[in-house]
Length: 450
Image (cartoon, rainbow, N blue to C red; front, side, top):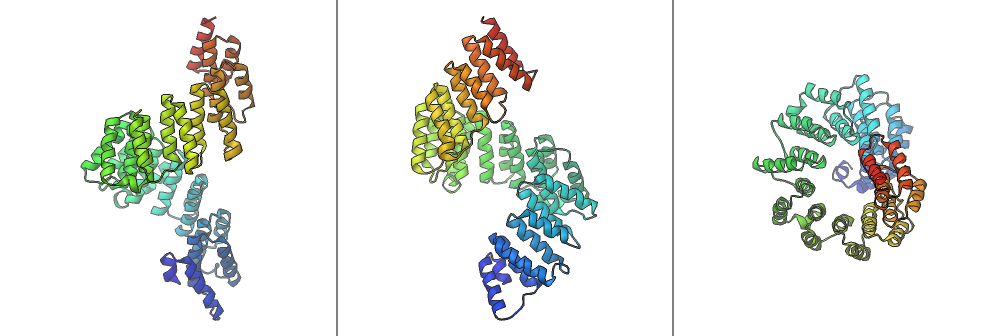
């Protein structure tokens, strides 16, 4: 039974349990631990709950902490965090493994705040965190994008000497600082590492690329290779993103050649999608189209990237044609797809087409319009001079309009010299930000055009 579980064949392990019980042999703690692990790997919550009832009935939880920890882990893997917490709270004794199971569950299921609350409470209860605890809590900080709570975690890592002996924790610390935009701290931790691997470099390159420091990201990419570390698909994706943001077509082309030589376009869909996006952002649509055509499998990501490139250039008819072709090939549009298509309508001043796509988004594809989609419809109304309709639509928006929406209306008022609607849009913009210099500038020009 243990062999089946450890080799990932959970269903066979559970069959052996049934055979064992049919022969009149009562499962012991070890049996239940194996079967709970099998349920967790298969996400079989129903069977896991049945085993939980059996364990409770036999009173095993009061005597075996390993069994209790395994039960928590099973519920976490099955996505039932409330049940995991219920078991945790009932444990008479808890160790670091108990806390880790719960903390990891919260982090992986999008409850990072609760994970950090557990970390605080764990310390209060006198349980020392280990490398797993610290890695999970760093991930929680990164997910929340917060700086402040990480200082205690960083101090604990230094205290335990983990930066020098545990690369997983060190990499998690770099990643957390980079994700939160504290790139100097990320670089500082990175510089202090005696040993670095591809994950260390990826964490730093990703941080620079995500926060608009494309040149630094590419510099790190080059230094990584000089240091003898071979880039992996994640590295290439980050480097390509940096090139796209910088408009560095030539450098992106060199990285493209490396990717082709390693055959990554055929084996890693997201590398190909990022390459399409890079060329599209750089305005090299012929190259983007060539890469797109070579992709063996195309999900929605490369379609969106290529359509966005054509929309940016004002090739609205190509965008609409690609949208129809995409529907014929299978990928379902997502919210980003409709932002691209609606923008294409807006740029071309096609109000009725824009309205048609806007209505189809929710009616045919179950996508609730976000502020970005509504802004496109408002923009096309403004472009066609229907300012009253645009402001009426703004007032009916389910979510509060942002400055982009009011800037759109102000821009339209500036073009046609409409002071009345301009003043209304300006007042709304001031309520959001009374120091909005762009709104002041546009309103000044509206008055000046009278």
